[in-house]
Image (cartoon, rainbow, N blue to C red; front, side, top):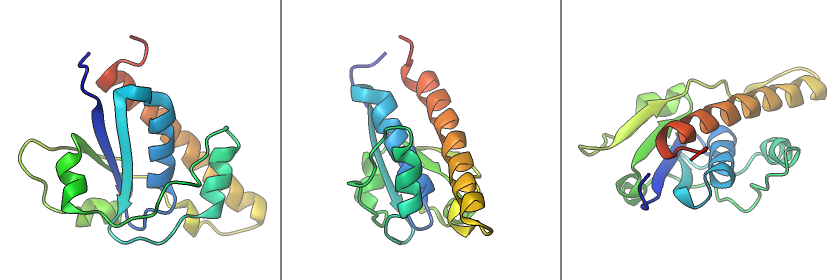
Length: 145
């Protein structure tokens, strides 16, 4: 394992839910082996339901910023993970050597139904992201090492 941390940028459409949750999980799970950030093609602000879903697991993402992706963010990243189809389709052209993954996650902010059904949608996406982040970090930085 390298002493240099892996820089991961999660990219989404509005940087309000999925990318925010992925950043939070990565910060907590990766420790000093990973530098995590998130951004959007646009910045839609933070979704209170995403913050609440993460808080249920003891992870506070309320201080993370909803930001638009910049060239500097891409330059700093070793790995860019798009977490929605729109971001995958509109991801800026990456410089040579940048690795990119795509996680086709549904947008919980578009969930409809009762409050319980909407909260369940956020939890399902949150749990999927958690599994994906653990797998990614185990492969890239060896969580169990």
